[in-house]
Amino acid sequence: MAALRQWRTYLSVLRRSSRGVRPSLSPAAQRTRTVRNAVFTSVSAVAAGASLCAIPFKQDGDLSHESLIRRAASLATDSSSTFLSQTTLALIEAVTQYSKAVHTLIGLHRRYLDSLGKWSSAEEDSVWQVIIGQRAQINERREEVQRLELTWASAVRLCEAAAEAAFSSGAEQACITVKTHLDLAHRQAAEVRKLAADADKLLMQTKVLEVERVAQHAEEEEEVPEAYLRED
Image (cartoon, rainbow, N blue to C red; front, side):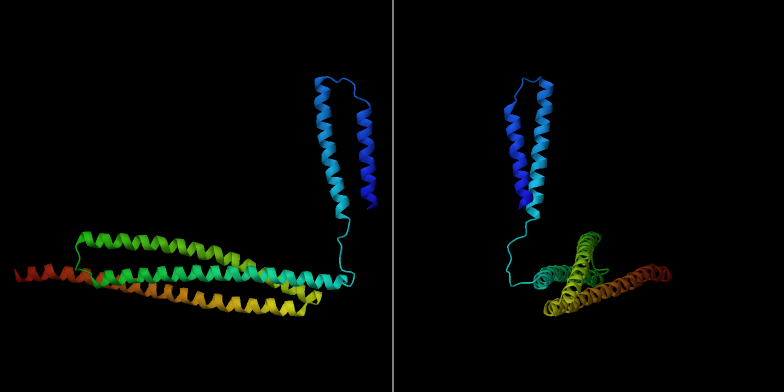
């Protein structure tokens, strides 16, 4: 408070001095004075802000610094847990949508294999256009999952740091709570990642089957003309 009063006194003296003498100034001098006044105002605002920062906020006299630190640590664990929960939900949704897109592509490939040799060239081209579009959608879903994976990893590190801070400050319950949230987030993320991995594995198997079936179909088409030639 004493520092703030000193600054107020200093500012009032400067204002009275500036009002006492007002000689005529040239345009260049007036511009210089304008700049000086702007700088003076900025410095005054910063100085007053610094003085206010030195003034402690009113606190409950019954709370010690240790109690306030534990309370702040609890708030940190709460906010970091909320961040982790929201990020985990977003990750689960993104991976689920990715898995659905993969299964849709698997269905398109199987439909193509079931109708292999039965469609016209135009129909096959139409199906392949749909397959290409679905592959592009899968790539977009995969990029979204990768982006959220990075955010989720940051949220995990934040919760781990908050848990460590809570433990070191004596807020054991807050530490236990955030660790519980961490365990739950890890389990949920692992479950949804397994679904995506299973879908990728099934897609790979479908592609291998498609290569084999297409090769077999090509061989059968080559054998038909040869049979006609032998008959001739």
